[in-house]
Image 1 (cartoon, one colour):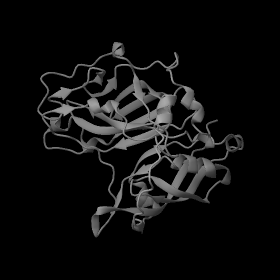
Image 2 (cartoon, rainbow, N blue to C red):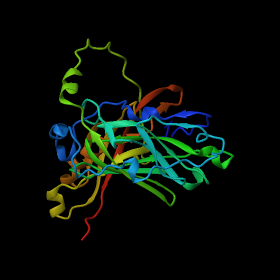
Image 3 (tube, rainbow, N blue to C red):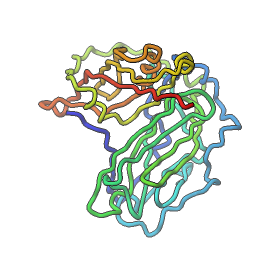
Image 4 (cartoon, helix red, strand yellow):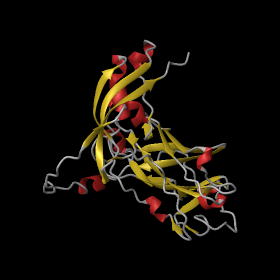
Length: 316
């Protein structure tokens, strides 16, 4: 069966969110148009035109008293602040910077971490649809992204005051992030800082090869069914030649979804040939809910499937 991405909605008396400053994934070179992100690694200082969101832009104070539930006792680090309104708020770094990590293999993210979102009066409800996070880079080329978090419903309205979501950004740079829930929208800007050159050099590790493990089982899933578990995607960018020729349409790719939910073994099957590489570049970043075999619910399996990458008609 497929396990869709549903964020952890925590009902606890105490929540510490200071961990949101520590990245927990490796990062990558940017694949926009087949380009490497090596050129962006030299941006070790935030440019002046990257106007990050700071506490001076509006420090939010959660309402008091807060109903019992996840928002009843909140702790953040001294280098963080609350930002937003009672209808939708989150926690941001005081200096506006999310520190990236050392580049890994293609398809890894420049920054990947947990990011909590809060809401009261009323709180999150699965009846109101998902929390949608979008991001676009402001200071250079990079694919924009969309991330979707479903919300679980509880019997008491204010029990569902927090969604522990995530934020995964494909390239270093200045990013505008927008959270959307029902009619509430919250936008902020953050600088995703590349690691210092010496940090990158010192992080090179020569390790003994790991013992070979038996390959995971693989199941076949129809593309339309698999698409329901997609929770992170970047928007494909139309190549200049295809844009000049007003080419649009759907590119169908063969893909294997790994046991971590990432795409692999992407191959072009059909659709406009001029859009094939752009489709592969975009789908490299996509993430799906992890699949488990029905008879082995504790062991994830790979999924052999197809992916539809849609290129809309250009605007006149």
